[in-house]
Length: 274
Ligand SMILES: CC(C)(COP(=O)(O)OP(=O)(O)OC[C@H]1O[C@@H](n2cnc3c(N)ncnc32)[C@H](O)[C@@H]1OP(=O)(O)O)[C@@H](O)C(=O)NCCC(=O)NCCS
Image 1 (cartoon, rainbow, N blue to C red):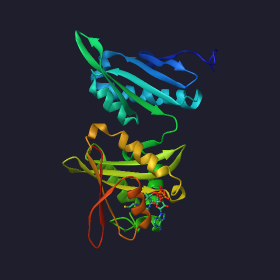
Image 2 (cartoon, rainbow, N blue to C red; image 1 turned 90 degrees about the vertical axis):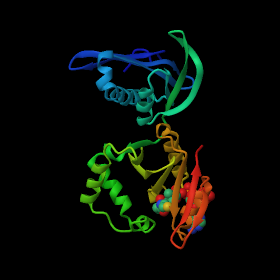
Image 3 (cartoon, rainbow, N blue to C red; image 1 turned 120 degrees about the vertical axis):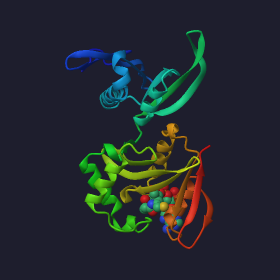
């Protein structure tokens, strides 16, 4: 596809209705370590109303090029601490805040931080329920409704498809209830939800696809999610586990949850993040 199979940079024009409204690409491509920096500049007059939309489109296209066509291992951004909404948008697209270079650039006479965000090729696709396709929604619901899954839930009833779709609709715009489906190469790995309980504590629910349980992947994708949520100021994650759910008890203790207390129905756990 490209004349030079190992270029130092690959640049694209970003068009809308035939007009160029941005450009950028992968720069400083390191073919030994297989990483590259992301560069993108868009028409500043569109930033106020369409910043997240164009950045998200652009990142989706670039990810396809970087990971599917070029098989890079990691892509990253290097951004001045001038546009906090850029960081929120990057994290919403699955990027992890990797490092802050303190007072690294002199801008208008003031030293500004530079923040690096990165996305790895071996990572999981964390998709908000509200962005899942109807087909994915049915797959998520089928997982939730399996006998060997719902018996461990607080609500053990089968959820009807109609109610599930209504519930997903209710999540739109609600920043205190986050529901994610986790995919890898098109395969559903599990689901994960967080509800803001106040005071920095978020209650979380987790389901791993039974086909993938015991493979060590659940811990990896849970840690990836927790690393992507810096904008929510989560200080601790709570969980309640039925006392006969031995597998879940082992899992929670393995990854660092601490028992707070228990009653006849549940063991109450907490994982402190800060
Ligand atoms: C709980 C859950 C998310 C954990 O994910 P997982 O992929 O199964 O977890 P892992 O295999 O990494 O860890 C489970 C641990 O339990 C251990 N385990 C398995 N069966 C066990 C049992 N009967 N008794 C004690 N420990 C057991 C495993 O050996 C493993 O520990 P190890 O890695 O030290 O060997 C997953 O099992 C799940 O979705 N279960 C159904 C829904 C559920 O219970 N959700 C949680 C509600 S609180």
